[in-house]
Image (cartoon, rainbow, N blue to C red):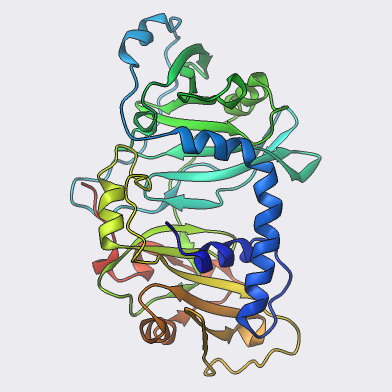
Length: 349
């Protein structure tokens, strides 16, 4: 499981009040944010715990799909076996039928993710979008799932997937956005209808691949950790222990392996969190507390934090190895595959 500190800091970074100059404030902000999010994601959580690794019986159901017109050709780069897994986005935010799909908010080894809200109120989260990359099979995570054919979306195959044990309102909408590649919508509220999800899916358009960039470069990462994700407006970076990362890559969808229960190795993360006015702007001053170390950057406007992992000695070394780009100028940010040591990046199996 992910370390409590890592999860709480991730929550704190998403819209929490500015950080005071101590880690206790981060924990309090994260817990409050986490409680608020748990309410809206309760349905998704129920579905998640019913899922396990396996292959549903899709083959015999495909013949029930309606005949589809020829889809518009699209091109998605498939990295060669043994190549570094590229962290790229393939779509931009858009509006459809009164809903607003955010720009990509998280990229992992398996997918690019974004939230979907009402266009008139972006705080009202209604769905979650995941766009899966080459070499991943997200459907295989749900053994015994009920698959129901849907009318084609933009000329391509579409279907609803209801995980075993889940209710009718807990089913997902899957559709092909390119040959053999799937996207998924999950409702965050029960009042979101199948038609709502369909309208959002119909508005999706594949865009040019763009590398995910980060406002920093890491000179040191412990040798037994691997890069698995990046999220948030300031590109929080997540690493997993090599054993957990290997279990992830052995799954059909290259997502976290729910069978992997080793809790000895904490996840390792790098985050930027807003600092309160008057914070000591000295970037050379490093503070370590609990399992995290941090220092101020950008003239004292942000705390740069490294947490989790093997302990404070490694975290301090990692923090001190970081060089920053200009936070105010994304044009200076670095593609994440170039900003991290190649030795800690996963490769295409």
